[in-house]
Length: 486
Image (cartoon, rainbow, N blue to C red; front, side):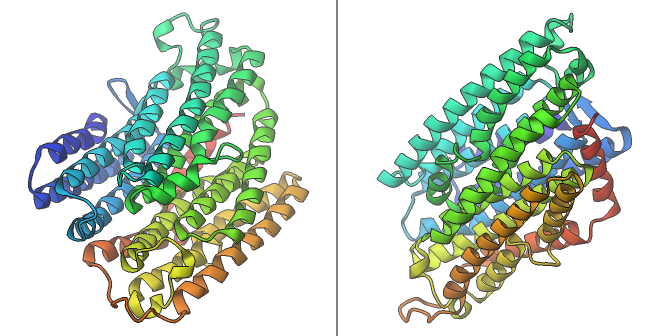
């Protein structure tokens, strides 16, 4: 089943590239992503029953299952949204049929590489998969093939390749250290084996390795100061791809860091070293991105900087090394993904209606795009942490864990910075939703394909965001135990 989950998107990518009819390509992608989502829940039941699930050299435990579930939910809604979004682009002559085939093929390759990174047990193969996401998304960022998209793609490719090279060096150091304790070299980079022998690894080498890993994969996460690719890439990519990158690609890169964090903490016998690094990168990311949010003039870049802020907030939660903060950071990962995907889908509807990415060019949404305006208000209330949305409770748990772990100054400072981000969002949203509608812009939503995913994401936000079913609570607690072995 794990093989099917990883390779179903590859089959869909191949069919998308060779099929000639648009409708057939759309249905192949929708059916494929539906099957993958169902298989994820089936495999998830096995993981919840037995603690892990293995198939050939693939392996899922609670952590990889949790992130994979987030990926496939967002991927399913992104494919649904893509149907309406790409149809509109085709009708308006922005792209041709050849580009449609390329879009769906590359998107499925992108999804497959993320799933491969999450399901393989070997840390070296995980690195290969993360690099694969870079290659697939570089072509998607430059999808419109103009000067600005090509510039954003090259910037993304160069910066992330440098980062992933540093992560590779960190992986080599872990491998070198593991050879001193693990006699079977073929298993020396398997996560399931390394977690058992982590206590016998050389702590000095592991420290150096983790720094390279954090900076390397942290470039992909978008930690400041390695974040400079992210606003350009998210702002220029097709909107469904921006949702995938912000909602799940950043989480997959974060997942990679967490794998090495567990090994490092066990090797050192103390989470203080990794926690301090997480707090530094997290606090800087939250402060810098929140200040830039105040000055943002384009709504997709605004959402991109918000993603940097929330990645930093998650890093702070894990950096506190407190059970409550760790649980809050994990819950925040899911809530942010659902909310940010919704906001990017709304941004796509705005872009196709107003034909501009500038905040100043968008007004009167309540009259022209009433459904999108409603979800924009809901999404912004959620993303800034209004109760009763899940992000409010996850942020509350992170800050409560900070106070409980005696990081009072950091917790108070982050709380004040979050107020700044809140102000930056609401000033702009009020202008866009309640301003005077341009007389030359026709009213009406695009299609059911571009509104249905918004309702689905809101349903998931309600279901997993603040109802917290017993199954989700149990899964989060299992992940928490994996991340805090000492």
